[in-house]
Structure formats: C-alpha cells, structure tokens
Amino acid sequence: MTASVLYQASEGVATLTLNRPDVLNAMNGDLMRELREGVERAAGDAGVRAVLITGAGRGFCAGADLAARGKDGISDSGTLLRERYHPIIMALRQMPKPVVTAVNGVAAGAGMSLALAGDVVLAARSASFLQAFSKIGLVPDAGSTYFVPRYAGEMRARALAILAEKIDAEEAQRIGLVWKVHADDALQDEAGKLARHLATMPTMAYGMIKEALNQSFDNDLAAQLEVEATLQSRASRSDDCKEGVAAFMEKRKPQFKGR
Ligand code: T3D
Image (cartoon, rainbow, N blue to C red; front, side):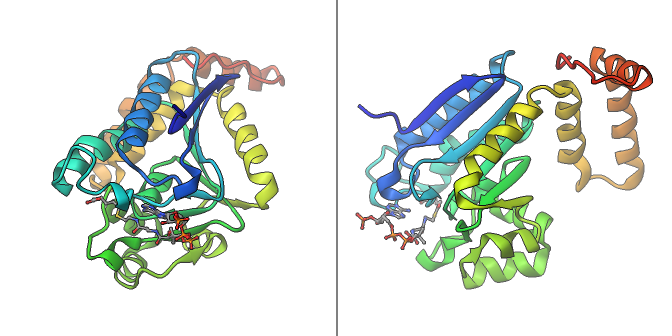
C-alpha cells in the first residue's frame, strides 16, 4: 500500500511529504498517523537537525478529509482534533529543531494550520491559503486561531476566518503568513537548500529560540526578559556558542555540531 506520508532523511534533514495527491493531501486517519510517526521520528533522531514538510502533487494539504468524516474511527470532531491533530502541531512547535514548511499548492483548513506550524513558511507563487472552515459550518482549528492573529493581526484573522476567501501566496506573504515566495519550479530546491543549511547551524540555539518565542505572547516584558536570560545562560555554555565566537574571532567559517 502507498504511504500517505513519505519520509526521507539525508544531510541532517528529514523531509516529510504528504502523499495523497488525488485529494490534495487531505488529512485522513492514515495520513495523520503517518505524519505523527514521521514528526516523532524526526524529533527523536539526533542525526536530524532540520525538518521539511511539503506536499506531493498540486496541493499542500486540503485539510480534513471530508469524505472520511465519521468513517475513520472517531466521530466527535473535538476528540479527532485532540487525538490526531494536536499532537502533531504541538510536536512541530516544541521540537528543538527548525521546521520548514514548503507550501507547494493550496493549504486549506487544517492544512493551512499545518503550514503555519512551521518555523519558516515558504510558498510557491501559485500556492494559496484558505481558512475553509466556515464554508462548511466549522470553526478554524489545529492552531489557526492561534497562528493567524499572531502573524497577520486580529482584523485579518477575523476576516479570513469569517469570509473564508482564498488568498494567494504573495498576499499571504504581504500580511505575514509566509516568509518567502519562490517560483513554482524553484520551491522544492529552495526549501531543500534552506533546510540543509539549517541542519548545519547551531541546532541547540534554534531549539531555544523556539522555546523563547513560544512563550513570548503569553508573557509581560519582565517575564520574557527572564526567559531570555535563562535560555541565554544555557546557550552561552554550548559548544556551538564557543565555536561561533571562536570562528568569528579567527575570521573563519564556524563548524557547528548542534550542541
Ligand atoms: O470534523 C472535523 O473534520 C474537524 C476537523 C476539521 C479540520 C479541517 O480542515 S475542516 C476544513 C476541511 N477542508 C475543506 O473544507 C477544504 C475542501 N476543499 C476545497 O475547498 C477545495 O478542494 C480546495 C479549495 C482546497 C481546492 O480546490 P480545487 O478546485 O483546486 O480542487 P478540487 O477540484 O476541489 O479538489 C481536487 C480533488 O480533491 C477533488 O476530488 P475529485 O473530484 O477530483 O475526485 C476533491 O473532492 C478532493 N478534495 C479536496 N479537498 C478535499 C478533498 N477530498 C476530501 N477532503 C478534502 N478536504
């Protein structure tokens, strides 16, 4: 049977490719199970220092598989989200390694949430983003009401969720949902290049950057300064910090080991 998520690890990068192209990589039970396994495998593999998530075919991910509703073992949507979606979104945000999402086509519903769970979101010029939920009488989930207002601002989050208008990659970049847009035929190369570069960088510091930013919007300034000081104390004792400073002083390229 064809895998619903392809997992490939090389040069320090685990690439997870959503692989149900006929339905724009809609999320059914198999895809979510394999995606979770892949994310956990990448998180637990010390040889993996960056993760790349993308989609096969012309879509990134069309969100929950609507044809599988009620037939996939879990009938209650809340239970479905808690059991299948939340562990993946949380694992991506908490993983102490950078996650790149390469949005190769439409990212709709929870597929848009998955795209935004990346630390660096890249998109193909023809990609699009759609808070599809309200079109079918649902509310944004899998993190969309967390990510969209934080990245794009509350007014845009409200309009995107309520109007459910599809926006293109350039608009998504303009409003802060996407870091960079690449030509369609360059996206995968650019995403791979970026992920491989990240895999040679100070992974431990990246993990702590994620930790600091994960807390940022919940803290006041004093608390966030304390978070920074605590993390910096750890970062400054890392091998990579020693190497980074030494390389700077010696005017050479640093050789980071990720620890
Ligand atoms: O209870 C719960 O499930 C809670 C969890 C909710 C999380 C969610 O994500 S809810 C939101 C679910 N997603 C959607 O509502 C999006 C539905 N899809 C679309 O609106 C459109 O397909 C797109 C805008 C994403 C793309 O449009 P287009 O015109 O480029 O493609 P298409 O022709 O609509 O789709 C291509 C095929 O994929 C088509 O199959 P066919 O006709 O060729 O056999 C279509 O049915 C299938 N497909 C697309 N999205 C889904 C899907 N099949 C199942 N589930 C989908 N979400």
